[in-house]
Image (tube, rainbow, N blue to C red):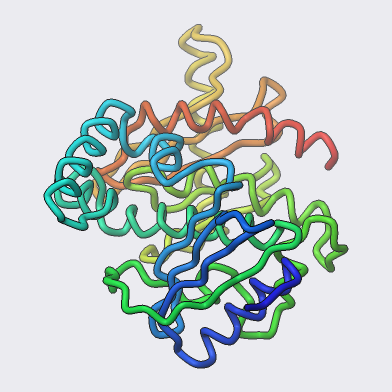
Amino acid sequence: MIDSGERAVVDSLKNAARLKWSGLLRATQAGERVGVIVMHDGQVAWAASATQSEDFSAVLERVGLVSRDKLAAANQVLQQQRSEGKTTDLGTLLAEECLISPSLLRSCFKTHVSAAITSLAAAPLLALQAEHETVSVDSSLLFDLADLFPGFEQGIDFSQTFSPEQPTAVSAYEAEKGTLLTGLTLLPGYRYSFIADTEGRMLTCHVADAVQVQVERIIPKALVWLSSACTLSTETEMGLVLSAYLHGETGSLFAQMTDFSKQFFVAVSFSADGKLGVIKHKISELIPAVRKFTEAL
């Protein structure tokens, strides 16, 4: 057993990765079980924490991937299967029912697992008990520590990553802009997104793993497109336009100005799997945070 809270999680994960260990890391606090990290050959297969803000179902619903009704129906199926001795999990069931693509399922798992581990690491007086146990895992849903926490291979101190109270070398500006697009990256059909100003300066961007694109080259073209839309809207007596939508053979791009001052805009590219209505809704939720962020620039 390893004590010392934050250090317990850091050391245990590093040792498990180094030894390519498989088993369960059961987390307890004051004698009560508060979470678990499942490892397979040194990779993380699953993690859950009693103190994380949302469970896996909530992640799926929040990013608009699966409706509450479909989640409820899926959970009923799971309960029936488990009563019959089957071990299918929610993610696998959703994929089998074609309610979520394998790539999006992996992204949601990654979000949930990262949040769970971070939550456990922040818990005071945490203890981890290692149990060498063979666990059935999905090989497509395994994560290296570097996947969950970029920079791990370069020896990043996980205490810096896990603990918000610890000072880091990352500025407040970098930390905030790095989280602005989080709510967009798990949307169905998501390809890439960015926030830029009308001078062509990119504030932040994110590109999906399977997508090859240079966002810096897209921004000037998006600006020309937005400018043309605004000009045409004025000439046709429609008033100022805050957004524009471009649909092409291989994908779509939606851009939204943050306000009528037309100084900053958010853009999201997505494939045929994406839904424009969901994209618009998520961007509308993001706009207040972007406005607050850009006010300090």
